[in-house]
Length: 331
Image (cartoon, rainbow, N blue to C red; front, top):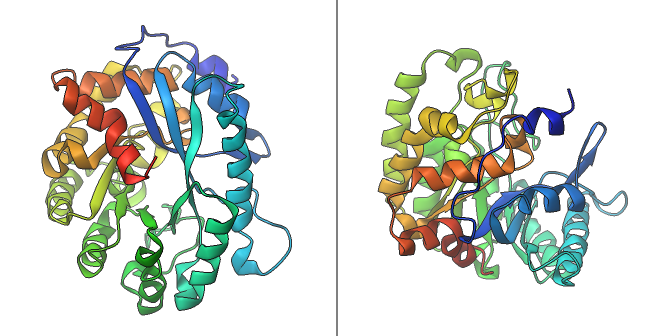
C-alpha cells in the first residue's frame, strides 16, 4: 500500500484551524523511493492547520558534489534557501516555509569549522544554526546517526572547540541524541551558557533493541534527566518526533495509522513533563516530517498536539505553536 493511501485511512476534523503554527522541524530530501520536496511539504502544511512558517533541519540532502569536503554540506543550505525563496514569492500562498534553516557543519573540525559556518551564512540570510547529530548507542540493533558520531561526542574536546564557534555568530545548536546521552547534553549546556541549544525529539527515548519492554524504567530516568536539563536557561525543547519506529510504539507496523487520540494516550506524559519542566516559553511543537509520517498524517499529528494542551490559555498556545519557535530561530 502506498504511504499516502495508508495515511488517508484516518481522517479527522481539524481542531482550532485558525491557530497560527510555526513548524520548527521538518526535512526535505529526494532519496530513491522516498521524495519529500516542495510539493509534498505544501500538501502536508496545507492539509487544514494554519501553518504560517517552518524551519528546515538538516538531513544530508543535496550536498555539493565538488569542492572541499568540509564545505560540501553548504550545498544543502543553498538548496533549501532556493525552496524558501519559492515560498517567499507568495506563489504558493501565505506560508513562508523554510524561513529558518538549520544546516550541518562538522564540529569535530574544531576551530576550523568557523570557515564552514561563515560559508553557510554567506549563502543564506535564513541560516540560523546547525545540527551535528550525536545519537549513539553501543547496541547494533539501534542505528546511530547519519553523522556516525563517536561515543561521548558531546564531551569531546575537539567537538567543544568547534561548538565554541557558534555563539559569536549568533548560531544555535540543535541536539539530536538518544535518552542515555541527555546528561552529556546537560553538561554541554552548562559549559556553554551563551549558546542556544534546541533539544530535539525529547532526547530520543528508545523502545527498540535492548530498550524494548523497559518503557516504565526508561521513562522514570528520562524524567529526572529532562528536569536537570531544563534547569539550563539556554535550552529550548522541541516537542515531537516521538512516533518514530525507534521509540517503540509500533504505529508504523499497523494496518491503519495512528489517530490523534492514540498518540495522546501513548505519548502524552512525555509532553506534559517537558512543558512542566521547560515552561511554554521554551517549548515548541514540531512535526519531524516526513520521518513521523511513518506513523500518522500531518493533520492528525497537529490535532494530537492541540488535544494535549486543550486546557491551555490562548497565550500559552501561542507560545507552544508559534512564538517560541519564532523567537528561538529569529523568524
